[in-house]
Image 1: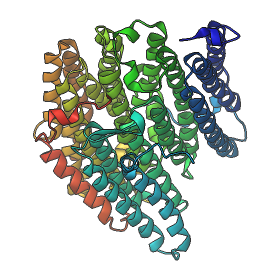
Image 2: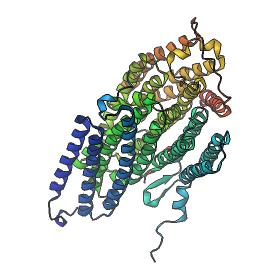
Image 3: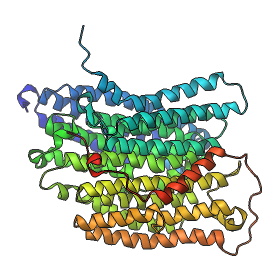
Image 4: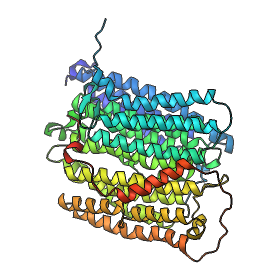
Length: 106
Length: 478
């Protein structure tokens, strides 16, 4: 491991990415609007990206960069599908709030 | 010119899943050129079945020729082959259900998504690096989100939304765990995690916790199981049947590879212990949850939570025998669980899926063959002789005692006792003295669904011999 390669210390990257990750987790748990929840999920995924990039620099291993690209690509596909599903649900309820989504229970 | 870093053997490794993925494209193309009418349903189904059969065949060729392709990113042979074959068989049976109850609108689209999802699961089964695990997992899940929503019923959109949000959040946990693994070792290979030096690394321990949360979610182990009944009930029937086996089998392959090949230090069992604890709790909670259900899909969702608890419990102690028995039980579970879903499919009318428990009242007289098949599957799920479920449970019990996890064996027995009540309630409903006019609508004969049902019945009976040699099944990560 070679931390000297980073202009900012590794711990700052890890700390920042952890903060972003927990903001994402908080958003998923607390917000009621599916669009905000999807954004929070993106935050969780992208905090992992930040970590991959920081570690890729430290370990001098490009696999981290490639992994981050992979995650960005998959996240784009996921967002497209997520928005489509939100639209489908919205067409039925004319209102987007996860509390109103409760036909399934038992 | 840059030399091609990959040899023919590397590309051969991914032939089975390429066949499945290409079959999905052919399905979509065939849909454009077939004329309207019955061919619109049968041509795509035939193409999917041929594609899956081809994949099963080419995948079987890899048996006994174990090697690591793409620099350790993808494993071929042995363990991976077994899981891939289980996934393919489950997909074939789901296609049989889909051929019977799939809605005409978006018929081939749904079939194509089912195949792509299958190829993602096959990728997970052979994944040897964090990247392939993530790619396979997302390929499996993204197709499933769409499949859950592909139905005009109001509940389908809701199931899709719930699954999307919770599953993506779980993927987020898993991904963050993978990033920490990468930080701990500087490599994306699972094999790099093996060894004593990594085990005491704080990054590795935090990563393991997050990674295992993601795994537990996808496996539907207890604190992370609340989405399962809702999604299973809301999703279309073939998708529910597919999810109930394929997601679990693929995730189990990843977990087994992780537990056996990546966590190998002296404290390995302590690190993995929380998973076995929640597996034990799942057996109890899953069966208790099934008690109150009035919908067959929900009931099977809860019973699936318990069943996956049994399978994970077999891995406790990371013994070679335990892995063998887990695979045996998983194969048996594939047939008995999808068999139960096939009965539900054959009971469906065009208006409603035959999943309301009330529809089973007096079934023993109105549809004696289906009722008898259902009894067999329920006996197998409960773990009673003469079925593969019984043999599987005895094997898991013995594995638990051998590995020193007697408390898990105790929980397994307690869970089974509760489940007996759940399953016999349905048997009582089918053969009890109730009078209820059965829905008279007779759907067109479904040769594929019946063939699937016969296969499931046969295998639930016959799957009592053990076809897996121990040396072939050991994880191949090195």
